[in-house]
Image 1 (cartoon, one colour):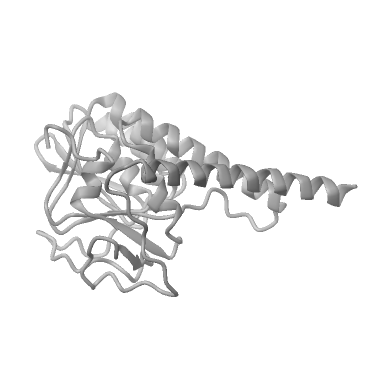
Image 2 (cartoon, rainbow, N blue to C red):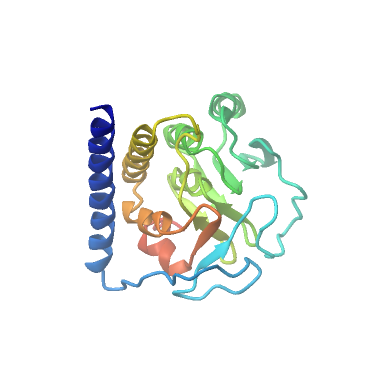
Length: 246
């Protein structure tokens, strides 16, 4: 009986997962610029040029970073988010988004006030912490920015989305992929699937709050966690990262 209950739970979770995927695909089918990502046994390295329809690249935060010649060499990025003053009311928020960073960075943002804009650079990290920081950034009414030659991957685009206006310089790199929502290997499979579904639902709600098209999840869900899907300028406009003021 226990095995039957688990099997039913897994079947229900699978049906919900398929329904979410169908919703995302349907949204793309109704858009005029619909295209499917190119699937294959492996993806090129980030050092190779990105073209429409060929946007997936291998990605490991400690190994694969884009050779974009930043305006200033950041060196090795911090393994936790760091908030530093850049110029006047502009501050930099950069580094890996580590678990527990939200409380610390929110307190640092409040101490730094008044400030007007955040320049972002991060390989990503904890999604829940990115969402919590992002909501606080929006409450503070801050702008978010990216500079030429810098990057914002994985969970970082959720920070980028939080700006009341978003200024993304030409030559900046923004990328998305699948996320982990709880990595415990001792959880039953149906509970792990439930956590993933709940996490995806929270991300969809957050994107709507920030004025970003939730269809951003289509390329994200289609891209394994060891790869990154680079958003081209037309994608940034399509998913509404580009604001009228940018």
